[in-house]
Length: 242
Ligand SMILES: Nc1ncnc2c1ncn2[C@@H]1O[C@H](COP(=O)(O)OP(=O)(O)O)[C@@H](O)[C@H]1O
Ligand SMILES: [Mg+2]
Image (cartoon, rainbow, N blue to C red; front, side, top):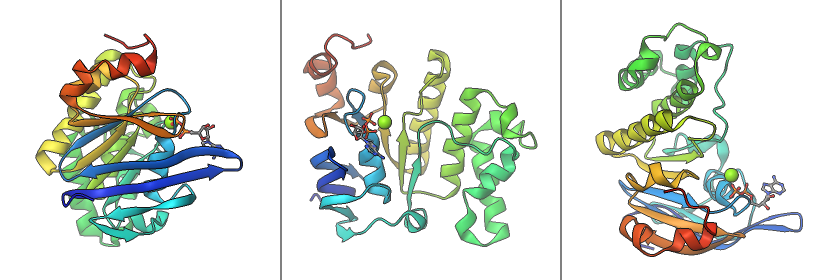
């Protein structure tokens, strides 16, 4: 355990019936950094995020928050500063953008503070601010992804866990989403753990990456190491986008 670790999965195994989704995985998120989880489909990337958030059953190992062992319990995670934005842009399509954002602060039970945070999030996402009264279903895929992230931000997280935020988006929009993630990280000091397939757009913003395969961490690299070690080519067997 390093002192600067905010979140640390220590020797974590997850079993789904007979399937070992994670096998003694060691993954950490340090204060202020952006960490990527990469690897082929079924490698266990989503399960790492779920385990950190209390959504996956731990067969062994321990999750640590700020150096202390703790049991992630879904309904308490947001309050404890850990927010998961799951795969698939799950926004409430029948609710307005504002209402979607208010849900991100549900645990506050304080209308003024909620309103303040919603304004702060809208200021951060000008494209959403212009459409604040519209139903979320009127938004494009990219805007819905921004809304899902913005809703996470309203909770004021220390650790933001993002599962494939670029899925199904065009290269131009992916670039915008990643630029926003970087901006959140830099301006708010939020630590980010992001599952990502789109390696090219990610390399510019990450500090570190783990490569998973078949439930195990097969490599841990710095941003520089990712560019030079050839690990990605090996793991993706020539499927690396350049
Ligand atoms: N709820 C579940 N029930 C049963 N098996 C699951 C469940 N979630 C994930 N798995 C299995 O665990 C493994 C890892 O899944 P996942 O973490 O979703 O991989 P990734 O996100 O890297 O594609 C896969 O073999 C997957 O089929
Ligand atoms: Mg996944």
